[in-house]
Every structure is written in C-alpha cells, then in structure tokens.
Image (cartoon, rainbow, N blue to C red; front, side):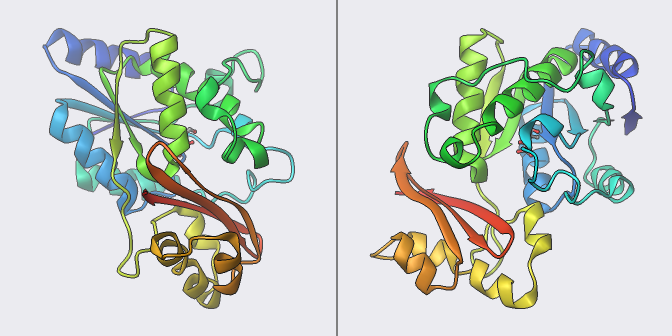
Length: 251
Ligand code: PAF
C-alpha cells in the first residue's frame, strides 16, 4: 500500500493501474475510520482492481461553530487499518492541494440537497460537492463508494456526477450497525456511556409504529431536526447534548 501526501504520486500510480487495464475504485473519507468505512472499502475491492482511499477533514462542509476542530483525527491509526484491509493507495491531501484558491465552495449541490439536512446545515452539501468533485478530478475513479447512512449525501453525489457527466459509477453501501442497531459513525466517539444508550434508540424509533419527533424526545433525545420520508427511506437527525446523529431505514 502506498501513502500519497500529494496529487503527483497518486496520479501516476492511478494512471499506471489504468494502463494495466485495472478498474479504479475510490472511497473518500474524513478519517476516524470504523468498520462502516472498512465495509465501503471491501465493496470497492469487490468491484475494482485498484482501490484508493482519501482521508481529508473537509473544512468547507463545516459551518463556523460546528465540530471541524473537534472532529476526531488519528491518521496513523487510520493508515494502519487500511494497510490491514489491503488498499492500493491512501491519499492524504493538504487543504492547499484541494483548494488551491482558498477553502471556498466551488461546486453547488443540486435539487437532491433541498430540505432535510440543508434546512439545518445549509452550507453542508455545497461543501461536500466541492470536495468530492475535486477529489474525483484528482483520483479519476471508475467507481466511488459512499455509505447509505448519509443517504441524502449519496443522492446529492449521484445527482452531481450525472449533472457534470463525470462518468463515475456511484455505489451506495448498506449501513453498518452495532448489535443494538446503532449506525456506526465517527461521531459516536463523542458519546458518553449514558448517551450511547439513548443513541441506540434512534433506529428503534425509526422502525417503530410511531416514528415521530415526540417519540425521539421520549426516548431521551434533546432535540429533533427532522424525521421524514423520502426516496423510499425514513430519515432522521436528532441531538443528544452536543452530538448530532443521523440515520435512515427503508420506509
Ligand atoms: O461522508 C463523508 O465522510 C464526507 O462527507 C465525504 C464524502 C468524505 C466528503 O468530505
């Protein structure tokens, strides 16, 4: 496995793999990897011959006051995990390489971004589209894998790839859950033992006969941003203290 701090080495390695007839798979991440990320990597490995994973905590998808500074970062651990699972390349770009003209939004999200997350994080999908578009330009994958936990994000990326005619197959990977059904997320690391118990009720309420904001509040959540159906999914975002969790199930 090669680790690339800059675009140059990565571009060369991908070009060589492509020239050898290999199909290039890509999994963009913000690090703090868990089994959910590794399942995306496995999916990419299943359908591709050369798999690249990027680790980049993207400043443009965080609003001032959100958890950009606090977002868990442990690159050495992440790289070791990727070494064990066996990827071909890890890309660790700098902010300057991703945003040569300053960390600013360069690509706007389409209609899939309307509502849900955007009602509460209006900056989010423009930031995601800007970084993913740039990463796609650099990596030039044939296939990219995203988790279905961020279901709206998956829809937004698919729309962007189609609108920009990027010719990349975007695959959604099923949500990985702990034994209590809690969707794996890097942000679960913020939860105390007591908060973790409440968090584990999110999927239960989503699956219940009365999946309402009140039911989430009764389950111990402090605030509910939404619980809504779209794309044949039931999606929710809710807060426990300072931690915001999202989840979705088939409706
Ligand atoms: O889902 C994520 O981890 C991020 O939003 C992504 C797609 C890596 C873009 O920064």
